[in-house]
Length: 256
Ligand SMILES: NC(=O)c1ccc[n+]([C@@H]2O[C@H](COP(=O)([O-])OP(=O)(O)OC[C@H]3O[C@@H](n4cnc5c(N)ncnc54)[C@H](O)[C@@H]3O)[C@@H](O)[C@H]2O)c1
Image 1: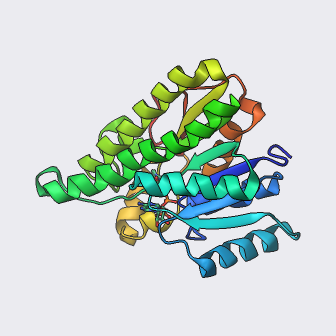
Image 2: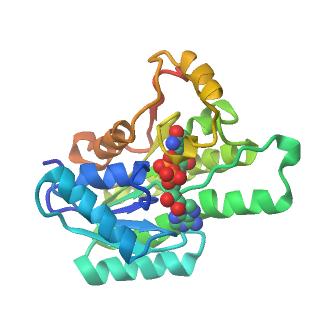
């Protein structure tokens, strides 16, 4: 049990097919109390997430959920207040909420750019800032932010330039947090996934998907559990001396 009795806040976990959900399941398996967060979260979804986790584990798990739009700073503050009222503390944040849009550079309008940056970049800033207020007080805490291969290679297999830029910003934010808060024992790291089998890949045709997987050294898409595994490593004491790092979960599609 790598996360025994820890309180983990996991964003972007409304879909049972998402990386956020897989992280919630894996963290619960490792003894964590989990708080799943999403702009789409409601009582029904929380119940479905809890039922799915408990079915997988074959035992009861401590699973709560809250609705929060991470692009709104006051909602991130309220989320943290609710989690503190519930559990008294937060040990770790896995921030997986995000949006993607496939658009060519010249197609991206002002509104597209604003929406992408508001959710993926400013949303990451807001949720991290709210959680860091707690972490700074406790002089402990751990952040794992989901970035993307798109940030590393300039454009994704799915997302446009605005998506890549937003995820590049997530990497820079994560490194800045690691540098600024390291002296307090707070760690921050990023995961860069690519081609993980989630709703984000639903827009790709079968032919396009086949063409892409042919170019991946492991010749397949990744599972959400494999992405969650990297999050667990970074959130747990196994990676105690790792901060400001980026872990690739891409089947070798970007070796650098
Ligand atoms: N799936 C992949 O191959 C892949 C590749 C690279 C990066 N990523 C990144 O990994 C993360 C998880 O991706 P996924 O594939 O599980 O996606 P997903 O679409 O299954 O999950 C993302 C979740 O974020 C939520 N969300 C969107 N806007 C929000 C907001 N304003 N506030 C709160 N929640 C919001 C959505 O409702 C959704 O449930 C994302 O940040 C994504 O960019 C995924």
